[in-house]
Amino acid sequence: MEKMNDPFADREGHGGERLPREEAFGDEDYRKQVEALAEVSRAIVSDLYLEDILKLIVMVTAELMGSKIVSIMLLDEKTGMLQTKATQAVSEAYLRKPPLPLGKGIAGLVAKENRPIQVLDVRKDPRYFNREIAERENLCSLLSVPMSVKKKVVGVLSCYTTTPHVFSEHEVNLLTALANQAAVAIENAQLMVRSRIIQEELETRKLVERAKDILSRNLGIDGERAYRLIQRRSMDTRKSMREIAEAIILADLGGD
Image (cartoon, rainbow, N blue to C red; front, side, top):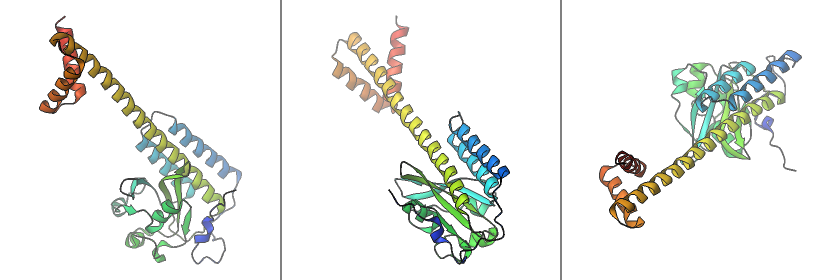
């Protein structure tokens, strides 16, 4: 069985004690959390755009966790950089934060190692980038968890408090559940994009084949030469093969 990473191993200077901010977990808290998770689940299977789903997730997370700032950073596989894509923060300084390299900073480590990390005070942790922003915005404790699907990290979900706070195991699990939902939403969006691209490619191929047949019939040439004519026309006019094919088909229909 795979050994689970311990998010509590990264607590800084807390002495293993719970801080006063943590309250007992009650039935009302459980109800709110279940409702919040259900709301996010409904959003994922809805027609909402990915951007709107991610915004909903950070808003729900901020409310449940009592956080001043919650953010979602997505990993660009090509550049290896984490970029903030959603946050409920209104701070211009926070919104302008530069991308974070994989393996650098707290979020970068979370993404690289695929495990939660929490920090008692980001203003004192040398691993944390943008400590000036933390000072200015009065950010203190941080919990960051990976957003992963099938062990593949696609981003990081982070929440901050304004006072020192040791996040409980329940809070880590809750944030992880929300992060996993965000990861599913991203995977669904990527699948939809890939599916749309494949569908468009198939439609383009059909249109080009139809246009090629029209040219072959009207000009008395073989299919290969007809295809080259479409390709050359596309290059000369700087239009797509699909646009050229559609024009040929429309002209043929108009001549009937």
